[in-house]
Image (cartoon, rainbow, N blue to C red; front, side, top):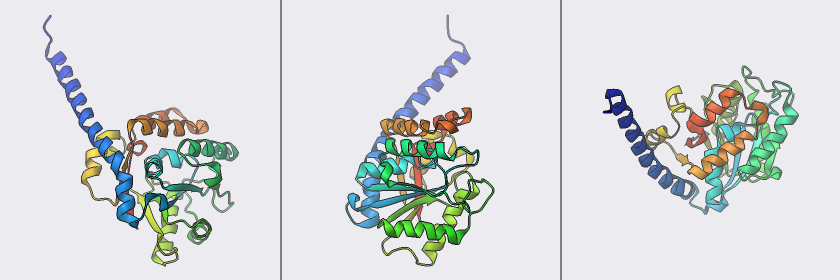
Length: 262
């Protein structure tokens, strides 16, 4: 029986998607292979293994949900990474569980437990509507940077990806340290670009857009690394509600990070 218009249309769509996947796969492999090394060379004019990176997050699961492409790409290039999580994520009284989940996730991302620090301060509660105190946060972060000889800090930008007040508080604190020249000499800050809702949930389809637009660093995961990021995210069992599974499938932050220098 001859295929009708709907059948031909579906066949054409399937062919188009297959072609697009192949094209994106090539771009993905090229950027994944060279992105971290190119950034390290252009940023510090030093070997990648001289990069001592500190990821500053607000909650356990931020490192996998938003920053996995950066962490895995820097690790692939030989950089050393650590995590400073500024709350235990105790909004639903699950702080102790979430601390353990964070360590498990970081281990899968190549960060040992000895390089993971959780700040459990009463004035830095997990609260989506609360802006954390800038001076307190800046003091804590700066102390950690100096104690560990950090030369690259990675955190959220002013949009905080999701607009979460705790996320944007980190940007405010790092911006303060940067603008007041309180950071150690040679220490740079990369902020994760917040994109609009459409781009946020088109996964790999955002690769050509991200490649075209201006940024200071672009990290794209290989298929194997993307699965590694998903495994890290699945460590956060207490947070894996149904919509988080959809997030892992469709969010570009699981495979792409575009960042800007302060």
